[in-house]
Image 1 (cartoon, rainbow, N blue to C red):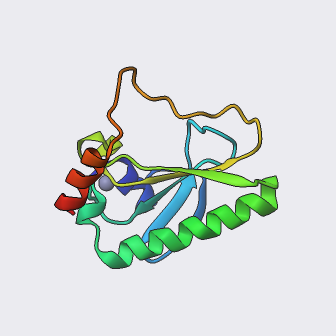
Image 2 (image 1 turned 120 degrees about the horizontal axis):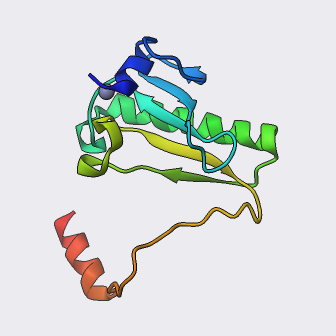
Length: 130
Ligand SMILES: [Zn+2]
């Protein structure tokens, strides 16, 4: 169905670091830092909302193992996790970006310009919708 499905089916080469019943984890070809991986479910969905609970749990378990490995491999004292979903999901296939963080590694979030409201009203409207 997509490039990630092909990687999960071993039809397209990737630098695979881990594979479980429901997930496959491989190096991102455009890493934020060395060791940056993508953890994907072996299921083509574009949102965590469409991912069965057992997949979410297994992805989280893999994520924790990857983060522990970063400590051993890089001496990483921190890590970053990113995930874009729905219409912002590349390839339309849900994936977690996980990468090691080191002090002064130069990585930073980039936010769009402009004012954003931070208030009790914003918190209240999200809380009411949950
Ligand atoms: Zn796919």
